[in-house]
Amino acid sequence: MKIRLLIAVTLFLAMMSGLMAQSRRPVLQAERFRHYVDYFNGMEDENIRQAIPNDSSWHWMKRNIPLFECPQQNVEEIYYFRWWTLRKHIKQTPQGFVMTEFLVPRSYADKYNLIASALGHQIYESRWLHDKRYMDENLRVWYRGNEGNPLKRLRFYSSWNMDAIYARYLVNGDAGFLKDMYPDLQADYFSWETEKRAASGLFWQFDVRDAMEETISGGRKEKNERPSINAYMFGNARALSQIAAISGDMDASTRFALKADTIRHLVQARLWNPTHQFFEVRKEKGDTLARVREAIGYLPWYVGLPDSSFNVAWKHVADTNVFCAPFGLTTADRRHPGFRTHGCCKCEWDGPVWPFATSQTLTAMGNVLRNRQQSWVDRRNYFDLFETYVESQYYRGRPYIGEYLDERTGYWLKGDEERSRYYNHSTFNDLVITGIAGLRPRADDVIEVDPLLPSGKWDWFCLDNVLYHGKRITILWDRDGRKYGRGKGLSLWVDGIKKASSPDLGNLKTKL
Image (cartoon, rainbow, N blue to C red; front, side, top):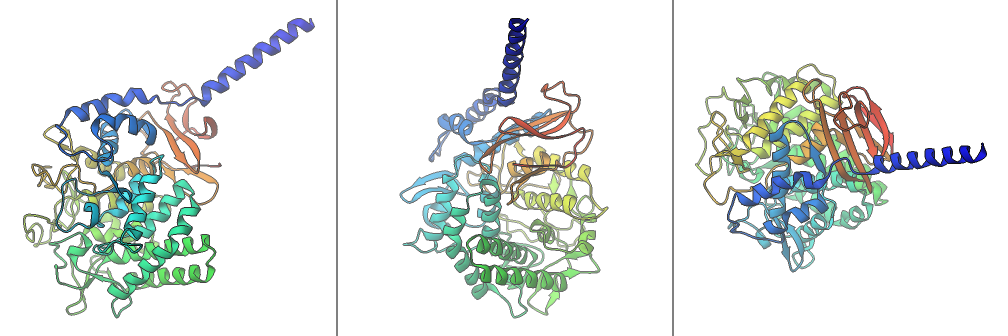
């Protein structure tokens, strides 16, 4: 009897050990997605090679990226295409790795062909790479690569670098890097105040230095108070308040929090047009609003600036008469008489669709959907716009990301120019991870998931191999449990152990 009992217990323990081992294995096997990279490599004759050439791209991706699977093939394909593309921009220099915007040299670039206009996007997107040295070294080059000083063109364009650097910390938890960079970031903020703060207390910028030249509202020589730079500076001040606190500088933390509050008040008081129900550019000449809705009017929500009473602006985002065009979100109101009239045939921000702005607007929209009480937009609106963004990233039947495109035809306006190919000027995978799959980075030891995927759209998806706060994270959605065999509904796994679950696409929170 005792022998039979011992055998039964041993078999039970072996079975449970096997189940535990099975549950801790990755859900997704990387080799299942290699065919995408083989296809991308075969799409081109690789004429520009930087630190990680095409023949090393799959090896690099296996070591560095979260894996993603869903039933919508184009979403999955563009997800892997954007990682394959981002990898092209990693460049080895004598001072470390850097990340470029264009693969071809640009006359207005800084050292190593670096351009600051989309650095915030590059930080947000690459924060999910497992090897943090690429962006660590890139940022140190930007802030110290000029004989210990910042590169000369660090502030050539408006930036939300400090906001993005803190957002990156929310993923990797590397407080040491923040503390090391804190003096550089603080000095950068004070330089912005010296160079670009207007008498009103807000910040001004030329549209060209917003990386948005030829706008309806501004000009290359107009010193206007713009929602863009002021949203960025609010985000930077708020981030510096947190970074100062982490660095033990509590007095500075309070000062930066007050700076953020001041910008919030002034943006809402000076840049809101109550007639248009939208944040607009305030023109230096005449101290009047520009009276045109532009995509930058959504940037205050990108950094969580406005009070909920301003959420009415979101009624325009899905309106096909205003911003919602067949091939994406336009950069200006389609009804305005100046729409598509200001372009100089090189860069036109007077209406065409720019991925730079689209990814910002979708990030802002996600913040509204999660954090604000409003009835103007919902998850279906979000997914429809996201899906259009996915569909736009093709050119002549192949995956493509470039500068900007025609809102009616989807034609990439610089698609045949070498400068436009693989333009590293927007985010996409960050939207998949934080938006569709819903991983919400936080500073504490709570992990939160809140997918923006609307109910009834997909029966399953998996985001796997996410490195977050030093843990391996998996997010599973399996409506009936048959796809992955790990239970029905939404589940959150940490290092292969199920930590939380829900029968539907709801909010999950658990301790790491």
